[in-house]
Length: 70
Image 1 (cartoon, helix red, strand yellow):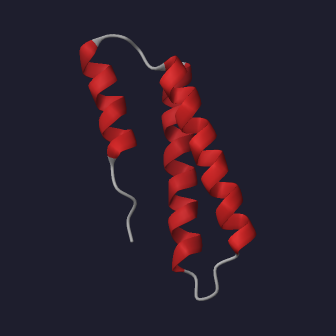
Image 2: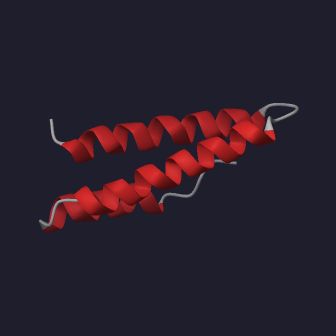
């Protein structure tokens, strides 16, 4: 498994945790901030490790462009 697969999985997991925290009755702002920073760091690393071939690059871009669930 390549690095970008691990990074995509981590990006999705952090995104889910971020959504869960946002939906809590009283979200922890410190945790939200930490999760946002972590997700952005993963996104930056994904951009560096993204494969160059067209299909996989398009797949990575689609994942990163998805809006966060409300």
